[in-house]
Image (cartoon, rainbow, N blue to C red; front, side):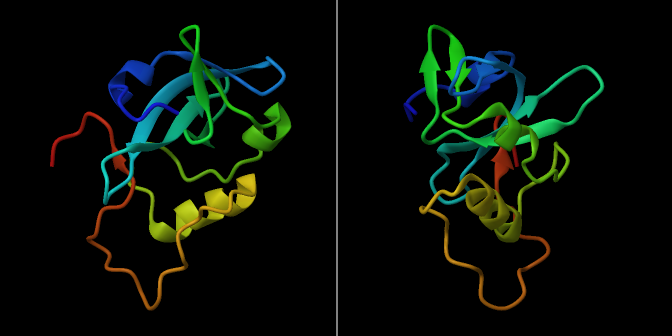
Length: 126
């Protein structure tokens, strides 16, 4: 996906799977801690359902909608970590594995620092 797009502009956009089936609406965008690049989006899959985390790379912004190159069923079965919180390195690794992405970061060695922020939310100041 384009890295020069304002991640806040993704919020509220419709999201579709690789076959054009509507998944839902982008609820939140998560930034990579080291680079500040948008990495994950939480997509609200329905009025009374949860948000599904989707990778922004290799997703594309097409005609004002987010097209995620995975099947709707895979997206809806993504691990549920809740929204509004930081993603830990372990949670990100689970998401990479779920989507079969090979660019997953290496597994953290040793316990993670509990106060370290990973997967910051776009638009939130520290």
